[in-house]
Length: 72
Image 1 (spheres, rainbow, N blue to C red):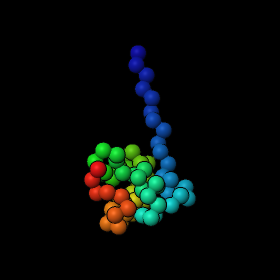
Image 2 (image 1 turned 45 degrees about the vertical axis):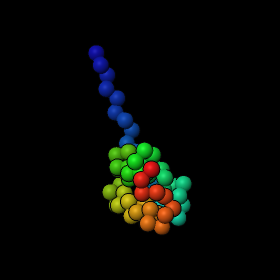
Image 3 (image 1 turned 180 degrees about the vertical axis):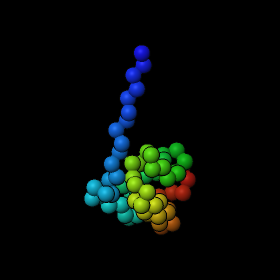
Image 4 (image 1 turned 45 degrees about the horizontal axis):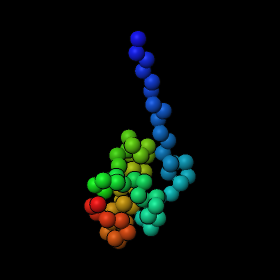
């Protein structure tokens, strides 16, 4: 008999008190995929909807300021 395990739901790091700023490249890189440079979805990052939009805007600012590349 197969047993199914539910994955523990990730907590939003920003709701817990951590901040994401476009100038902090190390944190921004955690929210961008390695191979193509795409912004990771909510189900992977664990961010709530409000903070996922904030993360997307910060990633876009960092790309525009040439802190991270648009494509790898």
